[in-house]
Image 1 (cartoon, rainbow, N blue to C red):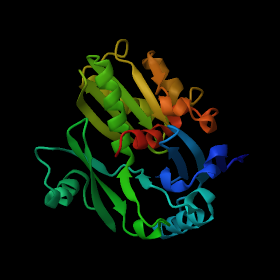
Image 2: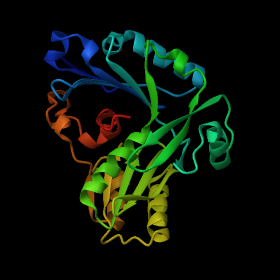
Image 3: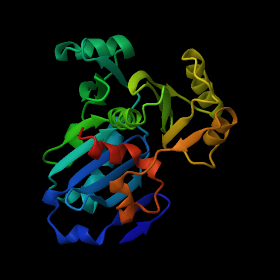
Image 4: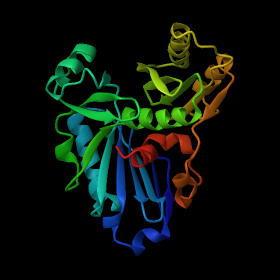
Length: 288
């Protein structure tokens, strides 16, 4: 069943209704612009359902929570009892702490030192196996209470991005590799060296000029070459976009994140650019 409009997408594999959802995994992607739900069937090794609903972040978190809760109560995919529910929270408020320095009791201190004190936040952390760091991040107070699931885990979008790209980097073992994950108002930039983590940060932008300024700034600081150090893109960026066009003026070697086996087996995602939901698919496969 496919149903698409300008504000929503819903695709379901025919096999979804033939087995109990208790064997499936659900990933919920939350950001200020949309709610995404992706269902994975471990037995068939493919994604079997996907939905996306555009929302508006206006009027503060209470209004946002109301939209999230309303959509989850109405969306058929959200109404099942899954084997595992993972909520992927997307925001710029996160920081990496090396394993050797991380102390759970001091996570808030580390976070506030690097990012300042926010209002009505809860501090969480993800352990990243491939990078040997913890990703310490904030979620808004009240988020957990407005999620319509009995049991769920909350992870940060950057954890999925870093883990998946680090796995890719370790398999390729190039001297230096650059990865960019694009969001509506900011982007993440990761640089690896010989399979190890060299640099990670996120940058807010409003225009394509802002975007390219920060990219080239990192290239300059790390002594990267636009000719030899290409970029692998993921997230909300398309080839005909202003961001891609200005990036291609300076860096000619650009690729989009490639699909994995589970993605290529997934019929419901065949018309969806693989790189745009890279973090959702990676969060299942990286076992966050």
